[in-house]
Image 1 (cartoon, rainbow, N blue to C red):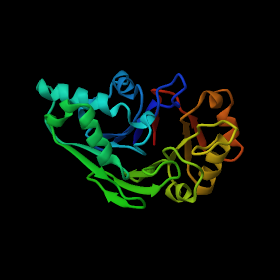
Image 2 (image 1 turned 30 degrees about the horizontal axis):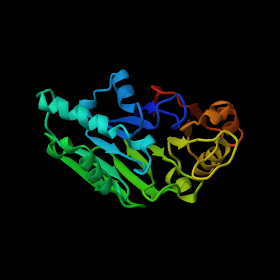
Image 3 (image 1 turned 120 degrees about the vertical axis):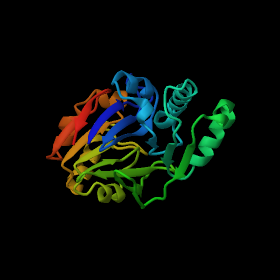
Length: 250
């Protein structure tokens, strides 16, 4: 599996906000699409016309879902021009995704007649889901009502996405023996609600016995400190500090 970081920053940083593309056997999927992620997808050379499954860790905050609008508009343009197949696009998130999409169609009536089928699925917390080329396990995270953590498994490898969250036992369980834990690190050393700092993330990675840790979702304050060095005090595995357009192979 190859992971491309589309966005690694918080809303008030100079980075794009949160988004990833995960290349799996025979397909690529997206996890979150925040501000500027769609443009960064194009910069990496990823063929967005081939991405038909998008997973959102939560829908309440635009720094994780803002560029869904850009993605759908671009896919509509391709299909209208006959430049892509008119196949189904699938959106997945926790409770609230269907209402979000309904409201999006009210805001942009042109989406009511998309030239492809748009399938919207609300995932249950603490669920296991089988897809043609991978499996997905979800667990509830502590951030917003729809917040879920994701564990993708394919080809004997596993990648876990925390989404935005406070420290919690569900994340430890979800990341157990994972090949890579992709975890938000909004804070460097300070402690704040709804998010984690570098030490807290590292403790979770260590307790879960994850093989590697990728830190992201940096605020300007977090960028002022050495988050890798802070995390290394608590976690002995491989540590990556995310940058926009970075790629990691698992």
